[in-house]
Length: 460
Image (cartoon, rainbow, N blue to C red; front, side, top):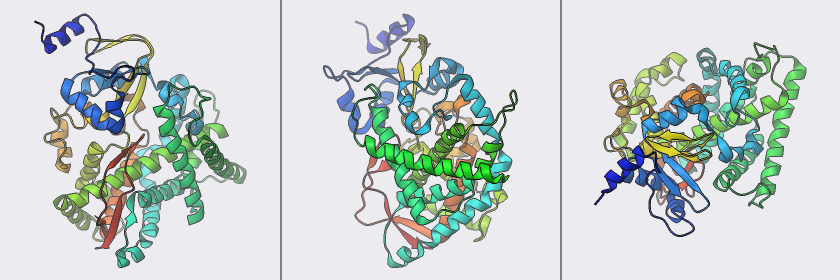
């Protein structure tokens, strides 16, 4: 009698199909996956420790969680795997921006965008970012004194949006404008979650909240195009991210970026520097509240290095434990818990045949919990990111910013922002979970807490 392991080996040798869990008629594994997709993917990884084919009724997806397989799809054979039909559903917001763009057009845009996130420029943005944080934290004084809880996710989004607007446009927008922009962006991001989950439906299908989304994107477009127009007409050479995009020139043709191209990259940058960073910060405050010893160690480092001052760039680089806290938080709650790819042509992963057109689901949430690479995976241990421990793990066991040529162009800015905000908040406040607030992850394109993360900002 052939065992399951022997059957898997035979399938590999024959270039056959990868293992697949038993499912229900017509809907396959969909009912098991829908309630908590990240946890389901983790269970599949632990059960099979292999590539897994999931039948979801409307079609199959290939679940990729092992570092070697991630390396194959995202690095070694990346030309065969494009963003595909799932990411095509985000064009209503991102247009042809870097997150969606492909081929030579993507390479040109990436080349034009890269200088905006260079080390020197990121360092120069730090005082601007620190000023936004100081202003925002001053607004916490009254609720702190009253013991009033804040929805920390909303606070982090307001903070990161204020930072990205200031660093991108050199603008200080008032609370009303910030609220309008935040509302419009959240409406669009909610639509992205719906559209990505229903990528197999035709464009004309009447999805919920479509009209509200169109109005929200139109409002965002009007704001962005107005700022671009005013900057072009002023002729000012402003040293911010928008200034870099306006000044960028193609080396071969000497041409700059059109208003449409700049608009698309602005939307992508807002998305990466706003939602993802805020989500990472929100989960970090929750984890620090749950782990007082880690919280105390981070605060001791912040006090020792900064002495109560706003940090300089050199001081930020010395907050090594604070960086490890952020990295470990993104291991447990990656801002992007999945990446989609579509196979252009037939391929082989781990000895299994991948047909042309196959949908690939890479799940960092699961990979970051593989027990072969992470001891006690569900525990919160920032020390995992000490250099000696990092050197002992496969490169692709940790991929919060993606990997390969499509790794997030703004990852260094994101890490700087995370360390800065963690340090400056810790200097003044100690966020604690409000009584009666139970934290349950809500799964969409990102991971958030159902009903919000309500925390009381105790004064230090």
